[in-house]
Length: 300
Image (cartoon, one colour):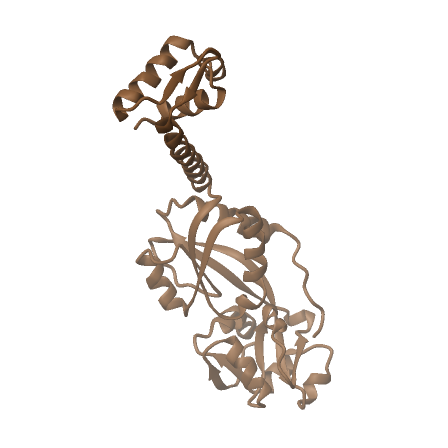
């Protein structure tokens, strides 16, 4: 059944007049009549009866009209949806996330993306970076976010944000009363590190310039776990600003002194050959976010 013929049938049924229907369809009456006759021959039924004022639907025509209107509506809906998908406004995008960025940067970024693409189906996958990379290479996710990714030839990396490092300290520690943390403090204070050391990748240059290595007394699986250990009194930890949104008892966040202030990068990675319009839309949001004003707290 030809969609175009169904459209001609619907307009004729609505107008109940071949001339008015032809005018509305911007065609002449003879081609419209042939289309209606062809549809009747295809279905083997009479759809219209002629009247003194035009045409009226037969019982079969009335039954077809309901189906034809539903079909037309579905076609219009599908056409619009396909156009939105092609424009990167609709569809599914699978995103790999992990760690402290989920506490601040990722929610803010997704809020921008949801405004730009309100019909997109966003599916989040919480997994460590090695599993994210595996899922990315296998096509199970479209993009991944984490603090540090090793370079792989088939993947493209892009900076999302740079966050200042803060010092997480237990409230009972005298350093909790300080207005800033100095290098002298870092030299002697036992630290809790991440298992994968991503935060210390960010501060290695700082430690190298000062010609010392931090005293690592415990290692945590991620920055959130590290702050939980700080709350338990197991030591202190350098943390990204995102972690300041994590409210735990007995944990105080103190900024680093200006002379040792350091930042940690959040990156995203995606396949170089990925052509998803939704990925392109998300990357545009990431670039807007990166170049926008990001308020930085002064003390927590």
